[in-house]
Length: 225
Image 1 (cartoon, rainbow, N blue to C red):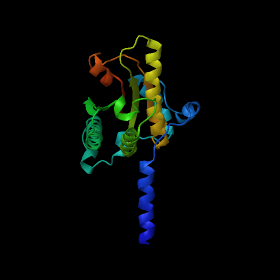
Image 2: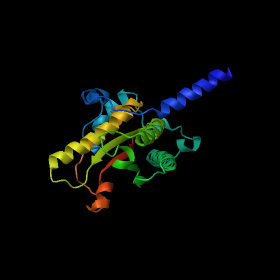
Image 3: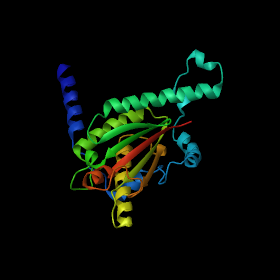
Image 4: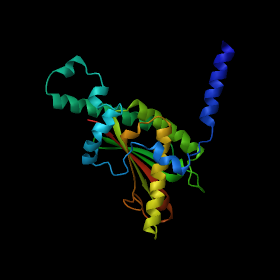
């Protein structure tokens, strides 16, 4: 019995240490079936909600068991309080798990934003997720699956480039590659909005240091209401 348990632990550790390789690009659309290739606007979320619910998704209020006290008073106020608490717990879970260089967790209203600098999750010399990046994305996947009453916008960004089309392609590649990783780790694709924004919305100067920060993937996680 002890040998069996030890073997299972060994297999689990070995699996976690295996190098991740993205599926062939030709299969990405299949893996991302159900994801929206667009911005996560309010209107887009409303339009996507029936698809999301049909895929087994749920709203925050459905996901959280209300206390007896929450059954009384103004329903909108109660639902809002539940949503705020749910997203705060999600933020704390991400913050505690992602204390690594090149990664930050922020609040934007009720949304939670995770900024992943490219070099923190991808190989330096190739368009592929690194071993440390795979470890980070596995951690995020587990948290997203725990707090599954949410929509996720996965947006890729580059630094300033002369070729706008090239910047758009590179940023889309990063966003889709991240989305495929999540999809292969059981994150419901009906929750996803995937977009490449090129050099738009820089968060640092376009100097040698700032460029490394501007090359990034941002995850914006919003409550499903």
